[in-house]
Amino acid sequence: MPEQSFTDNKFERLQAIIDDGAMQKARRMLTALSPGEVAHVLESLPPTERTLLWELVDHETDGEVLVQVTDEVRDDLLRQMDYSELLSATEAMEIDDLADLVQELPYTITREILASLDNQYRQRLEAVLSYPEDTAGHLMDTDTVTVRPEVTLDVVLRYLRQLGDKVPPDTDTLFVVNREDRYLGTLSLAALVSNDTSEIVAEVMSLTVQPIAAITDDKEVARQFEQNDLLSAPVVDDEGHLLGRITVDDIVDVIREEGEHQFMGQAGLSEDEDMFAPVLPSSRRRAVWLGINLFTALLASWVIGLFEATIDKVVALAVLMPIVASMGGIAGSQTLALTIRGLALDQLTSSNTRWLILKELAVGSINGVVWALVVAMIAGFWFNNSQLAILIAVAMVINLVIASVMGTFLPLTLNRMGIDPALAGSVLLTTVTDIVGFFAFLGLATLFLL
Image (tube, rainbow, N blue to C red; front, side):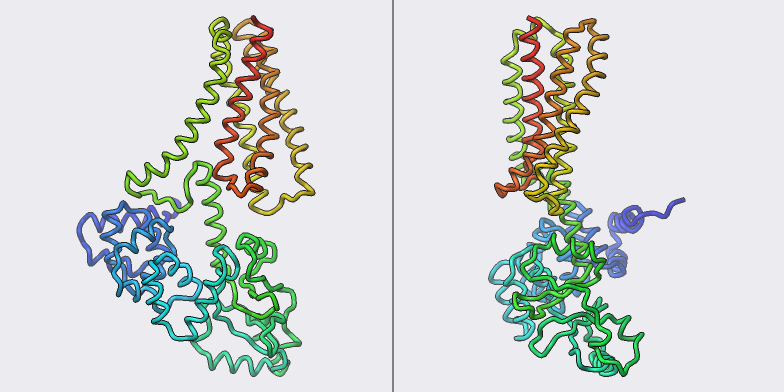
């Protein structure tokens, strides 16, 4: 039997404990979970049970849990916390996590939190907050271990022993800087312990890890981690001064959020959508895109209405026209997904966009012809009408070609306009393929069957 997943195992046991009213047992079980697992449990509960469970969470881990839940769930939990609990939750948090959290708090609370920090810690936090969200500077942790290139490895080892538990968590690499704190290279812990202690840092340090500018977009940072198999990377300012580091656990969060954004955006939803949010807020958010979809559906219906007389005389058109629109929609969606992925990975540029459009035009033409022949044979056999078979074949070729081109053109245009193609692309593409499909099929039928 395959091993049970977290959801099938721990969560179900915890749910049963809550249902039985054994709160102390539930508290003990929560204490044994990691902050990430607690966050998963909270996101998986309806509001009433979530509130009950949040009261049982150890206050020492409140902050770590808050930074791991989605924004909407975090807002819900923050509303349940008083001033003293908020201050307590921020104690001993890492700089990058604290920077994420304080942005969600009321200004008065944020000001009090900043005032409660020691001067050095506050300056480091303000340095992170000074960079825009979704940049390397905002993502970084300013807590690093630096060494000079001229010292020996023995000196470095004694320095690390002196730091003891003050060495930042997840430290796999030390950063080599000069006297002006400009980044020079890295000294991995593996190189530190495997070389003679009499050697100097400059002789064994690595120059392969390129620094990341603080203003670099977090998606670009994720690409650099992926392409170079990094576990951590230095962050520098415009003059090359070391500001902090980014670790792979931060990048995992970026990748997950981007994946959720692409997936949820196709349905017009935010990646932070709370599955168990109250009915009215959820209804309001979804109503916007339902209204947009209704408008686009009315446009398609209006096109059909233009050919009402044709449909009345040739009833078979009403049976076949959804096939034309559906095939175009699928073809366009395939191209749309490919293009949005290319934009997300920064693989599309002005030099290769034209090639992609021509390639998708060719793909749409080939698939259009192949499947048009298949549908034509089915339609001809079904209605015993060769003229109708030819018309639906031509309409399908037209729609699949247009759908393939628009699946590339629409997201590129939306992206240039500053509109998220993952959010708006599918709605607009559906409208185009429906209108083109109906107009081509019914228009051709009007010209040649009446």
